[in-house]
Image (cartoon, helix red, strand yellow):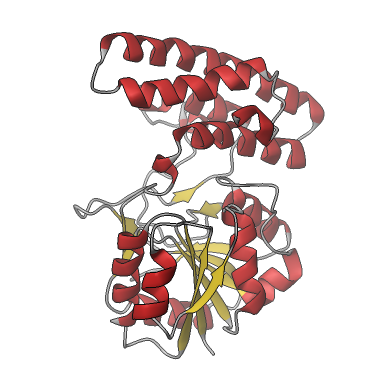
Length: 314
């Protein structure tokens, strides 16, 4: 089999339905299978899959295991030479699956590929990135990248490439639509399951580059992404894991003195966001509920003294 498409679903029933329809319309592709891992959605997703898509292999988890662990469940049973990790809040345009296979077949040094991703309005989304540094992390935490002009002097403040329409190796790709060569995964290992959400694809791309594999944008691919539809349903958890995953990555691959600097940056960033969302909560009635969830997450992070334990969310 050429390709195994793996989709992790959590409470995105209607979007998943549309995603599967777009996949099954991709008749130009060679033989492929679809594996859906449901993380205890309880929104009718399983009933829909069993009734409407009997050709889909379904794994039903009894709890939300997170993205990395659920992906690994699918990869372990995947029969394809290539594994296409795909978010349920996406649509696949014609020829994309066929072009994925053609590109990977023609480029045996590519261990991980990334599709070109667009918003529902057709605007290109950032999907190819540099590996993070303390400087780029500092820029992201304080949103400096939004106000600084991009130049040779400021390029280290940016983690995105200046042009997503690139045809050369990159550091990492977005996990919403990434392709893994099974041979590469067998060498470097599966997703690190300590990441519940966010940065798991960063970790995998980092290990792929360390292992001598190329990470590359896949030309002539087009994926429409509705962006973070599942994560928006639990703002507290999203807020928590944004900081936890960054910390895990730095602790795993960077020296201790840089990890200490990261902790300081995170403390400053959380404090700043706490003040910002407090103002939103007080003065914006339309965003008050969302701001309250954000504030809960940031307060818990501060009170926990960066003890990234799931128990602090309760």
